[in-house]
Figure 1 (cartoon, rainbow over the protein chains, first blue to last red):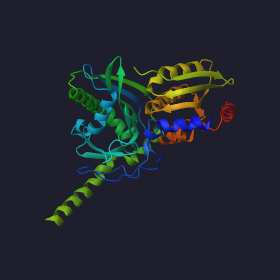
Figure 2: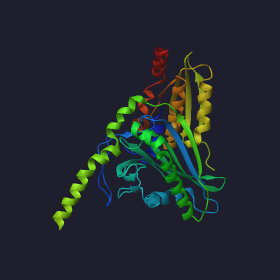
Figure 3: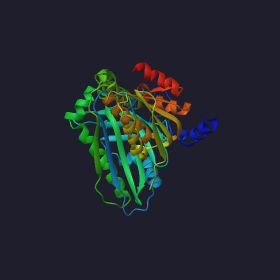
Figure 4: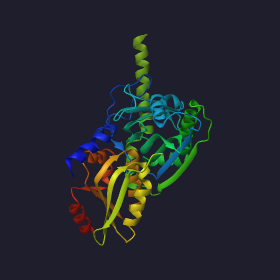
Length: 250
Length: 120
């Protein structure tokens, strides 16, 4: 292979990918966010999780809007936290949605009476898409891609998830505790609100495909990092710290 | 409308292995081309599909997703995927996305073929 082709290849998409990493690092914790279950974790893709592998695609046609795909993705990068519901708060770093950056997430799950703390890494980001990859302990093992493209002169905004439940606890939650439905509601809501921003009232189109129906039993050990369990274990520590902090500042 | 910017051709290199030569860009728009190539590569009962990524010019996260779904499809048929011709950059992408844990990467076609024939 020629060196010229290699250089050309690296210059075209290299800047859009996160740099090689061993483990995630959280540089600064945005105000209001709980940073837990992210620092020191490896990222996990669609091949590393426990549960069935689903590809879910949500899309809206922004008919009548003059926004280009670049406009939509730029807007989404800057405003994604505002589009997320209160039960799934995103906290990007000060750098924003850039390759390699960590986005902290504090969320509640159906049937779980406390919030869980986790996060995602920006795996890829260009003008027309960005992808968030999950760490060990996240409910999912895989990634979500937010994108926009032109389809017959109409800008389409899309969210596509390719992921498995990370461990047996989350697989049970997704299948039997309403977790999957909650997730679908969240992405539907994000796209509906995005469309509303552009003055478009539209139904979100959803397509779900069971890519791999097999359970990866060897990955059951992932439960060691389960962010829900670790969040509840850590809760008394966080409460104590909060009380002590209030006491020292009184 | 975004055009597909990739071509793929299939070569049968042994009784058990086929090579898919990829030239261009692997993005989500390459899905039909990639799946057609996979179907052609496996039509003769091939057990090992070798991806020649020497001609890969650009790949985004959508493209990696396609490789994952093709891998799952291959595994369901008890086939294996391997690859050669990756630049250091794309090897790093495979490591970052942990695709390298399921798709073996070789330094050359002959190495990939030797491994395929050894496994047959």
